[in-house]
Length: 370
Image 1: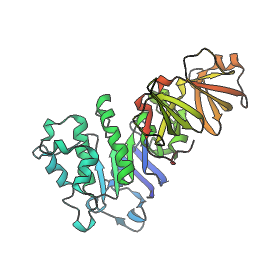
Image 2: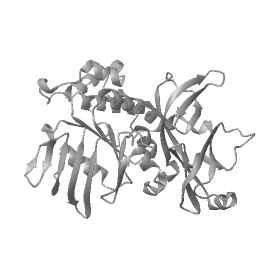
Image 3: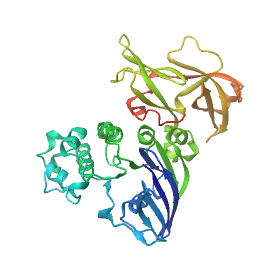
């Protein structure tokens, strides 16, 4: 799937000018509040008409102001999931789901009710009303309703923003399954580094209505300067690995990655399964000699590729571990004390316990560039 966007639009004092092309299975629109993410989603969905521009999904032109093309919302084959589920309170879950396909001609339907219900794990909810559902359950039903319209593109506007951490943890695996099994291209709006690093294949960073950066998730997550101030502590490296084996004695899983073997808390995944890891820069310690007598189990040899100044006296050190980049954030005092400079051989040290479930995800093998 290719998504080409080139639009300009003014809404009051806010000006939106964005241009990018994406071929990812899940493209994240990322940036702080007020950066233009929701405005852009509304334009792609057909809820707003841009002053100028062109939007093309897989060769199908949705908007071309020069040629006076504007496909109306109901003909775009675009599914939309909002921050709040927006379910019909007088309908059962089953009624809400079936409403999703009401406006789609039978000849264009590809999503079966049974497959969507199984994918989202909502079979036991079909007879309930929305008032009897948890926040996570309501969002799963909202996603199901959008899928049963058999969309060619799915837009998700901060679908987890109104949920607490427990409900987010509940629904994230279903979004991963949707991304990997349904094969529907997704544009996902978020300002959360954890969500973007876990889900996205490509990231478009918006700032004040402009595209500040665009590229693979692994490359963007290492650009701490691109992240919202409140999220920079969550930035770092995104790398791919596969399950090598499980350590039953210590309840751990050993992952094989380009940077070397990495031990993490046990994963419920078979050997050979792809895993995506987010390694926060703040969790990486640098040693100039291989450490001894240390509780941290992950010690990755590498060479310093670059050093850049961060915020508040911090330094961002990029370590090349056999072709895989690991980012570390340390103090300037530590940098000078250790005599670190580009080209020096070092060891990146990462505690196993830093790999909680929010920092690991399955799927997207082959789509992350370190």
